[in-house]
Length: 358
Ligand SMILES: Cc1ncc(COP(=O)(O)O)c(C=O)c1O
Image 1 (tube, rainbow, N blue to C red):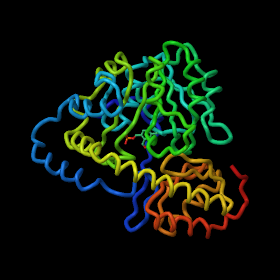
Image 2 (tube, rainbow, N blue to C red; image 1 turned 120 degrees about the vertical axis):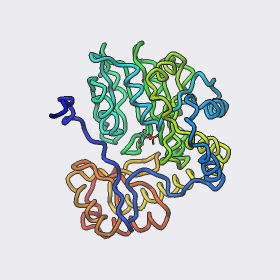
Image 3 (cartoon, helix red, strand yellow; image 1 turned 90 degrees about the vertical axis):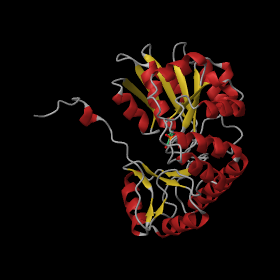
Image 4 (cartoon, rainbow, N blue to C red; image 1 turned 30 degrees about the horizontal axis):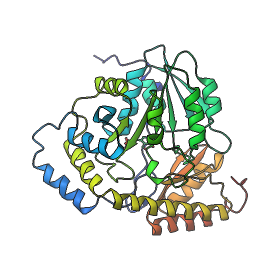
């Protein structure tokens, strides 16, 4: 007897998580290098005693606290099992089989997976030559079938960001009935004041949803909690497709405790951003092409040389994230880890000014 599975499953792209190699420096998963602060660890261990109980399904305390932080109402917030799950929920909540999701490519690799899981059509628009979103081309790619547009800002894996004025012009022109999901998973690492901030724009457009996460800046990737700020009809739709209890109780208390020490965590993000700028400057000086990054990683568009560069790093026990034939994404780690990466990049025969500048 065999089970009859979905015929199109084999065509679903696999999500490729960053590799871990024992003893190696892991710069492959866009995590922050430091663990949760001591007060957060205490909150998590205190909550462990209550794990026989289901979590608060709506994460009420966290939602109320976050709403205060963000100056929105709790009814304008949906919590999710990581912002990844909220991306999936957005597709489920907006699209039926004949509808389309639009996003730039290359961008967050979960977008095409979620779109296909939902049996929905996808339309992609290539990034510009400078690896930034081409919002003009994206606007032209909207069709009567488009229900959802992901704008990943800063973009994973390139780190590039669109400016506030570009976003405003885009949002002004997006037709009624199309939801724009501004995925700001890396927002806290942005240092360029010209880059758009979804929360500053949120009130002006009923069709704007802003996604953020505790995984990156708040160092809670292992606990899985993210949020979506949107107008009430969208939040209610997200609740409809929410997997019950999928924001676990440890994640809820850890996120709350992290908000208590937000300033310290955000200072860490600024240190990561400074390291990012140092790493990029040194890579540029070696002749690598590196677009401006506003996230906690840098992108090396090495094309056909990507695999060779990744292997070279692996031989020196540094794990990065290759996108075969396109480029390599390198997460910013501790200063010593970044130094190790820079030394390995310097020693690579492919470096040395052979690439066009970005
Ligand atoms: C652009 C982007 N959005 C969302 C996520 C999801 O993060 P999480 O599900 O951990 O909140 C990621 C994680 O890599 C990401 O890169």
